[in-house]
Length: 147
Image (tube, rainbow, N blue to C red; front, side):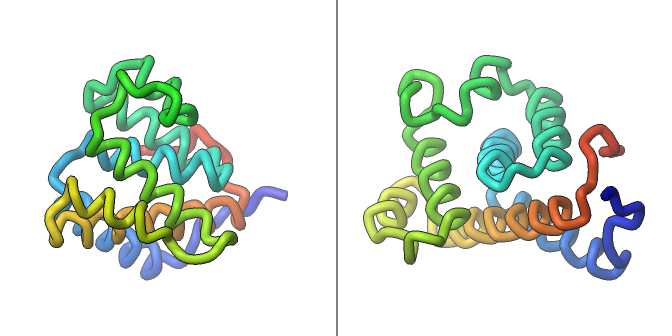
């Protein structure tokens, strides 16, 4: 059953503000899109996948990097060490069913990001997980994203 109303406009504005702040503080729009795509893959959020795949391509992300993102660990030559650290952190924060974020995953990310960047990265991971849960629970179909 599809729901027509996405969410309360006040909640949407607040989520959008957190997302914008996290992206701005991270300072790398392509990395931000990779993180949001990966979390959306893990959460099976078709709406967010559609949206962030489109935005990644608009930011010049090559098709092979987008297409192979779900196998990033096996494609060492496609992603930088910084991106790989961010993707590992994304997976650890997104999938908390096994416990806390492993210390080695956090330490790896801390080697590639300043303290402020790391805070923004974790904020971005947190907000995309929130968006995923909102869209999946509302059964929002892909294809409706309008910039």
